[in-house]
Image 1 (spheres, each protein chain N blue to C red):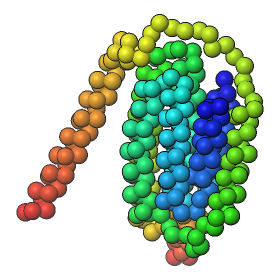
Image 2 (cartoon, one colour; image 1 turned 60 degrees about the vertical axis):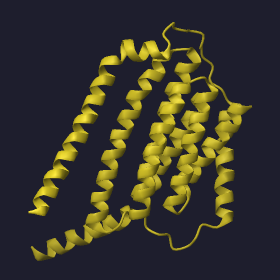
Image 3 (cartoon, each protein chain N blue to C red; image 1 turned 30 degrees about the horizontal axis):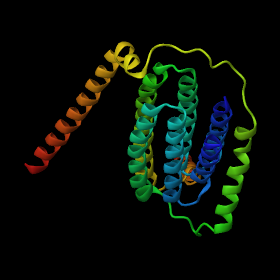
Image 4 (cartoon, chains in turn yellow, purple; image 1 turned 90 degrees about the vertical axis):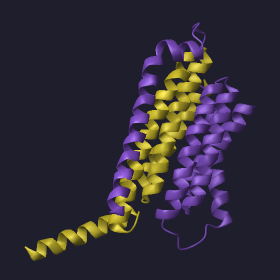
Length: 106
Length: 154
């Protein structure tokens, strides 16, 4: 069952990327890697046990994954259009300066 | 031996996908991750899973290429070959546990249910309902776009 270690490594890389990357598209790629790690473990376990149901349930995992990807991409496009960048650090700076100017106005 | 090669390729492409500076190169590396995953499925006898992986992966990659080109901030400097080499080396080192370590467990249990039976007997209804939901969404989008076009024309 070497694939358990393999999917654990993939999951660790994905979580590390999720925590450290500032670009929103890289965050999306990290989410994809985490989803791939989960499905890899699921399918490899099912096929090594000879259970066809594992592959059948993979369709559900893929459709959920695709729906999540769609929602993330939609949010990403909205945020990028609103703030003109997909860098999280820059977006936080813009939000902070906006908050400070609102405080001064009050 | 094939599993080890595929595992090393998978981890290296995952590391490259996350840590390359340019988004387009990252997406290309993610394509490698999807294809290595599909080959791992084929190697393990899960052919249908490999087909689904490639089908879904191609769609995701197409959207990611487009959004990466549209939204990705251009890096100030080009990625140096030394950095790429370091990332490949890091990926190779990270994949070593998958080659040398193993988790023991029983995989002897087999069920008589093959893929076709499992899909149509256990998941037939929700696959059809899923297709119905996707069709409804597609029709809804088409109607909204048609109405928008009609209003724009007037």
